[in-house]
Length: 402
Ligand SMILES: [Zn+2]
Image (cartoon, rainbow, N blue to C red; front, side, top):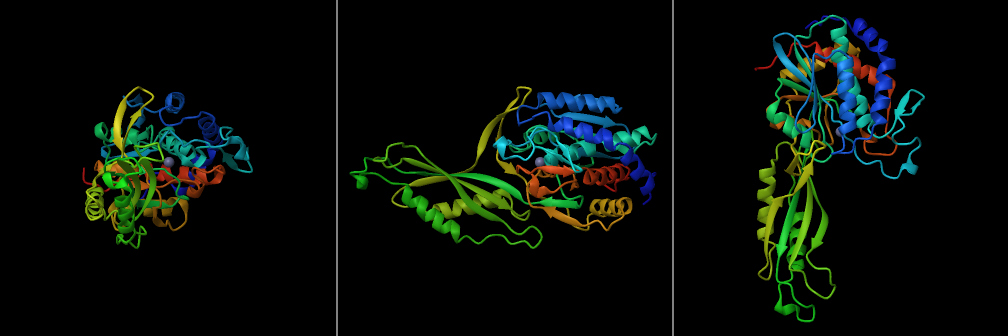
């Protein structure tokens, strides 16, 4: 498989754009974009896509920004990089202000530097550089910058309902190594219902605390799915809420939140069935109970409100999948080192894309362990390596059934 550009040509083109790329990444970091508040950054990204010569720039009803560079008749490719970021926390805990985009010793600092404004900038530049060099990619290339990834992938879930490509690349940080999947996250609410009563006469009520205790005991001894690649599933209880505020009244209802990280071999349906089974054997004294997926309403900056369950699907492309093999060979050739293939420890929008039937790979610059911390920064050198990788990936004629 030969690309229309040599590794040297790709490297030269990437380095020629270093200054612009760094300046744009700094601008992205200097534009705060909490989930639901992406108005300003969406406009910034649209303007840059237009400036760089994208053939089409659109925004859908949820505010996801999509840039298009026309290619040939081969399968199409989507680069996917979310616009939002998590909160900065206490700004005094940062070495450089969280929205400064400070460039110090070859690193760009600030919230979103690795997760994922630095990667987004690299993905956005790659197809534009190819076009500028007068090369048409084998298939259409799309740059998708979705909203609200950090609160459950509201943007990409919507995007995948109306916008399809043949292959997707999610640019979450991966130390410039290839990723072919990750575990999922399922948030569950377990409700225990009894009969509230004054604490002086507890025998006249049904106290759901005892069923909750029994449930937690059973949960702890529940066998978990094991998986050598993904490290298996795990579950842990997080929040407890009751319907009472007085210390001298027993609760009528208690809600327990479970955070379940599932290996790809275990589906949310499997999880619901397992939890249902242990709930049934945990109910004492006539208490009742139910299990459901946690759901919350979300409103986009464009004013769309959706009720979305807190499920980040897991995904896995097998190691011998042709797309994994093609990407690995191409990146090895373009970057000059044997490209490792691994899985992510966290969940991404890739799960939503795969759930919609779009085969998805991961590749991005930066140290993933810095995401969501007050030490978040990205090395410019890593961004240039990623940019070279994205240029190469955009030139692949993907072997996929359409
Ligand atoms: Zn992210």
